[in-house]
Amino acid sequence: MRVVSVVGFLGSGKTTSIAALARHLTSQRQRVAFLINDVGEVQIDGAVIRAGGHEVVEIYGGCLCLMRDDLYQGLAELAQIPDLGWVIIEPSGMADAERMSRLLERFPRILDAASAAQYHLQCRLSIVDAVRYRLLMRSVPHLIRASVRVADVVLLNKVEAAKPSEIDAIEADIRKNMKPSAVLQRVSARDGLAAPVIRDVLGMAVQHV
Amino acid sequence: MFNSLSRQMIVSGPIASPASVLTTLLSSIVAHLGDNLVGHAKAVAHVEGGVFHASTTGAESVIEVKTVGEPSPNGQSFRLDFMCVFHGLRYRKLLQAWTRAVDGLVASGLQLEPVEISAPLAPPAPHSTLPIVGSLASSFLVLKPCCLIPLLWTVSGGGISFLQIFEPLEPFRPAFMVLTVALLAAAYYSLYFGVATVARESVRSSVRQSRRILWIATVVFLLSSIYPILAPQPPHAVHHGAGHHYH
Image 1 (spheres, one colour):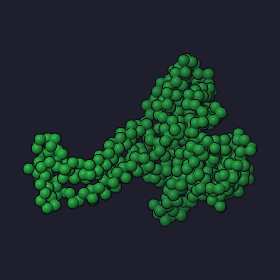
Image 2: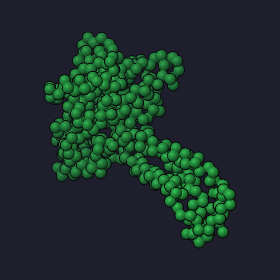
Image 3: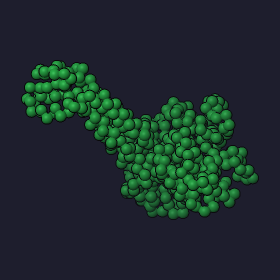
Image 4: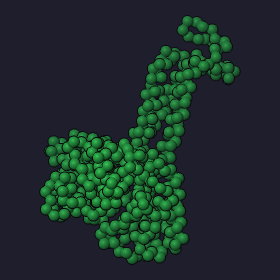
């Protein structure tokens, strides 16, 4: 199974983005399941994804990046689903992206050789809120920087609502923290994700979105 | 520090539309919490055919509402799930905002019945009991018997002679100090860094209590460590070699 991890601060547009990815995968007849995490005692995002007809493992009541055993158990459960092509993981919006990335990289170590060969961490996706970027960099800079540092793809979201003059400056700021190989795209996730964005995240050719 | 609040309610009464109930609820909450919020609030209405989902970060008072499936806009009642997480706001403030928002809905003629939330799958309770208790116990062992015994002797009028059994432990005092520091460090890590930045509501009070005990253990350790320097000389001590004997 190929795994996409989607990190981003609270309200940055993670659920909206993964819904767009799911729509695309489903249209390509790919089977996709979700591992959704929230810190609250009520699981909101899981209910939304499930209502969309997808298989969901919910882990709630704490931050996934600190719940290694639950994460691994959840992934192992999903791995039992026949013909499952993709797993999209959405940790809570305050997850430490670097810790999350380490956990996902180490997961194959607990698997047998055959299962480990099937596991592929396809993409670490980071969603950054363009509208609140300055505010978040004042309040939780460590979380924002960490999410950008580990990302293979960074989506600068809500650009439609941000001031145009600000977007270039934010993008330059983000690029300072990005890996050289990482890709940055400007998006408006609520309007869907464009074909090049989906190609960057899923690593597959896109005919129609 | 982040704080979260989660609630489940059954909403009934004259419901114009579930989406408007969610919008009213979230608008009221973010209005009460103030400007420049760092976090988000979201709510879902479970109705026949699908869900209404509303969310807001508080930025420019925008409430985004979307539907998943084909939710029926009419109905006598629905289940409402609510969750918010904010950075830098006290839990009490979140609770006040929630209470006011619910009062507003009730004033508009709706009935809201709370649903008991079942326990999450994996409680993130910190494993800090052992280090805290251990550090508290070893803090007492850090006390120099030479200083503790005369003090207690004076206070008790001579009835604590059994404490002399700790005298043989005095050569190990540096080891106890190192052990205490290690245990305190483990406890601090567990309670401040090793657990989720947001604890569940049911865990929060126990974390707070553990942190209080940890600070007490730290004070006990510090007092134990510096007491030999500050303590007055024992009034009846007679030195015989390395040990002390009291008459």
